[in-house]
Amino acid sequence: MDVEGNVRRIVVPTPLPLGGTNLYLVKEKPITLIDTGPDTEDTKADLKFGLAKIGLKLKDVERIVLTHGHVDHCGLAHEFVEISNPEILAHEKDRDIIEDFGSAVEKRFEDCGELFGSTGAPPETFQVIREFLDFLGSLTHPCEITRTLKDKDKIEFESGAFGVLYTPGHSSGSISLQSGDTLFSGDALLVENSPCSVFGGADKKSVGLDDFLDSMEKLSKLGARKAYPGHGEPFENVKEKIKGMQSAYEAKKETILDYLSKEELTAFELMNRVFGIISIEQVLMGLGEILGHLEILAKEKAVETKEKEGLIYYKV
View 1 (tube, rainbow, N blue to C red):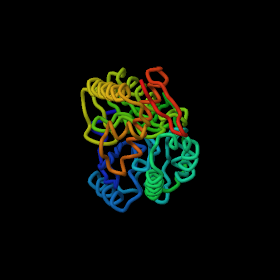
View 2: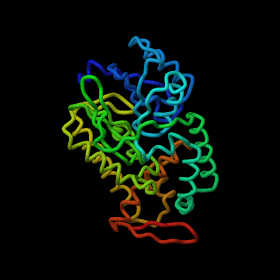
View 3: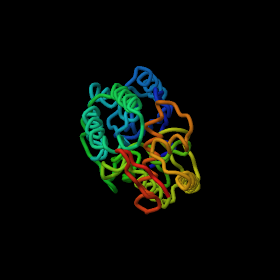
View 4: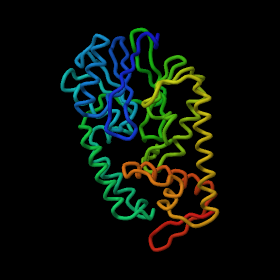
């Protein structure tokens, strides 16, 4: 398939710290939209405008492929179902958060309650996190997946196909798509942002940073020339960009080890050391990234843990 000739990027706004989300319209039968953006009026207006520039309307979209189940990528999918009932494709492991975000988040919060409680974060921080998750829930509506995807599946078009690559870590069901030497990487490659979301492990229990790093390594071996990410500008020299992301991970790891070589710290204390003052909206991401590093370091036996009064302290 001629990706450059058949694919158009549409950037839609989001009310989240990452800013706009990239959607990709494949103007070839069946007309396919990769991701939808969140369910906001601004998103819908910009999407309609972007489609109109290509000569299309919402009703013309015949298939939607969701790279993952986060609301800034899938929240508006239900709108298309009401208009034209397109096929909705996503990975099985993100089915729960796409089809019922509220219940899925509640279950995950319950599963991870003990871990959150051991981080040393004050109770008011948990309340803010809960309120933020409730806000995220307002940006999406339940949408039934009509076809689940797995690694090495094909998404067929008239003149070719996209290959499905399972790339968990940012979410449990994150996928990327490959067409020749081109990648649609969703949030598996975020050059300008932190490398991991919260609890995106393939096992649906772990934080998932190790899976995220494995997914990056997997993508680096494909020989792709160009990547179309879920946020930010498309970029070339994919392998070199991934090397830069891996180097940033190693640098953060060394920073964490340096702090822990000097004193025992909880995950929350370590987050404050590493990131300094961050906005309350970013605490969940910041704490998730620190927990991801600590999860890996504990597996590698590079850090020791000690429990004191219900809190977990880490030390080299």
